[in-house]
Length: 468
Image (cartoon, rainbow, N blue to C red):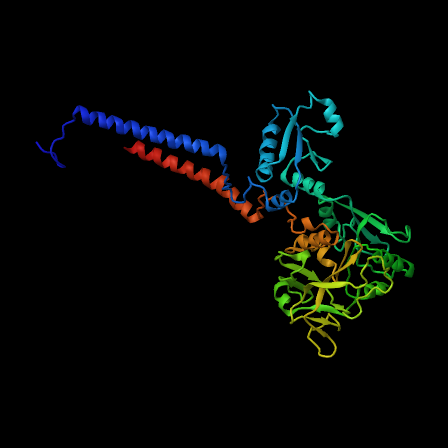
């Protein structure tokens, strides 16, 4: 009798052999494909981090540091195989090895190798000794942030001394006041810079190994001899970072003349920024000149109480510079300027602020300028910012890209060009911060309402079944 799809089919011996051959061929092909995929998996690796913040992957800052290390890295982990830290360290270092394959990891059992522990200066179990380019550093708390900062420090050339001028009410790298620079200095130390303070009244010589001399907003007048010492330092090729504030120059006008600029009177106000900050005196900058120090930088920055810089383009000559391969002329390059709507307010700021033609200075105004010139075989660099508040404790961390901007300036002026565009923060935020209201809501839902709801539904179901 015919079936619904055709006449009844006879399964002959020939057909049976054909079906067996087709089945065997299919199984063989499946096994070949599986073997091929297994072989390819050994040759090529693909990792995907599907967590929301990429918590299992290295941050862009860590990747940027690794790409700038052109030599092999050796990491010795001082932990035994049975310790829970063993697998955690191995997993963390493997993330670095995926970006930089020539990182060698070796585990050292502290109990079996006490001599290596003493030689490395290790004091805690789980510490790492990171070695790069004949330099080493011990990391006692192995996390991405600490490892990346250690690699960053090891990758820098020589000792990087940042010498902050003191003795005239300057912003202090050690002070905790709102106007001081301790929060910024803490990040500078993590990046491998050595922070030193210098009072020319106590030590009239600037150390020869100074990478950058930092003048951060003096409040009292410098002595003429101190100004001459700074001028001599600059004349001999020293790099300079000058964070000035609106108002008098406190005796530093000869230094400004030496570089070829002068500060504008008054404080810059900007009606456009006022819409964002509710203060006309706080500049919000979102675009920058395409200079090496800020190349690829697009974050917003805030500059409270800034002033303008006027370049003396016809007088940028250091007349006392020696003819020893040093170029007398400085080459200025504007880093930051204001919108055309801004102006320098020369009148009182406690009244209604309005532009007064003939009294105030119209924008756009230069706020930050970089200076370069050839000194022997090296390029001498200086940066002048007519605002120091952007790097102060009150503003450096909570205002857009202020911290990254400040770090870029230091890296550029100290000739650490390879680290200019390395982001500052190396680890994603792993903390959940709840407001008091949200904390109360979660407690009510999960501690009270949810248990009561489950209990009530259970009782209702039980009572309904008893009635049946």
